[in-house]
Length: 355
Ligand SMILES: *Cc1c(COP(=O)(O)O)cnc(C)c1O
Image (cartoon, rainbow, N blue to C red; front, side, top):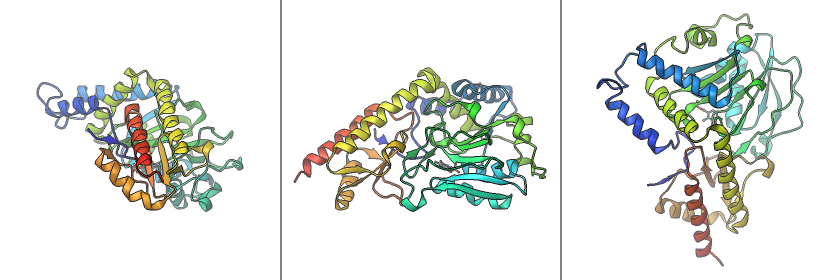
């Protein structure tokens, strides 16, 4: 079996793949999960359990709705300003990478954006810290984990302004205090389940205040009122996400995952810092636990290492084109044994290339 360090869609537990494939053949009375009505009581139960697991695993308090939507995190880039930003309002954005920039790009259709800080000039190798969020902002938007650059924001800035967060690549990887957020969104394919499902957690009281008419499918309120069943939901993605969340709960939940993710990240960063051939790309204090970026001291060795990794059963280690080098994505389902295998690989490569 290959060690899958891909950034997304990414590894899920083997037992989830097995259970999901069994349901494709026989979900209930010989019928496939792919052919039953989304309005059937059985599928109602799947939606109900998925929402319940999200609430339980993240401690979502009352007054928030958990929505199972489509369109990816990318549609949220538009839905957020459409639903939260009045036409004459200004939203504050923290620019920490490509995804933050793409989110920012959609704001102009609905109002004004104010970039409170950016690390673009240093190719996003760190998270800006000293910035002011104007108190009259309609909301503050940031990306908690920058999947491409390997930086992660652990300390939420203190602000009275509603906070919106793109948590696509670190949701469920560590404990968060949902009460500090007004809207959280995440494409499922990085830590929740397969592609096709987008998770949104929204504080009900912030909706319906822009004075704007919103098409039904793009209005959070339609989905809140319909319990995520306004139209046919992504049935199979939701079912598989539910299986994965069950797995997560059985492993001890988010707190237990966080411990493991810290152990996995520490082990790999330690090797990157020790190994004479490799170096990290980001400010140490902003290093992501989910996506670990590293390059080689001698760029000439990058191709040979990529080949060596491929031959030894490693998948998805190629860095994003805007950073180069390598990226080890280590979501919840990646076992620590795969991290140790990668460390062994880096060490044996070092042995071979010692001068
Ligand atoms: C992958 C990713 C996205 C894009 O998600 P889609 O579901 O493909 O639209 C957005 N934000 C972050 C942080 C991501 O990692």
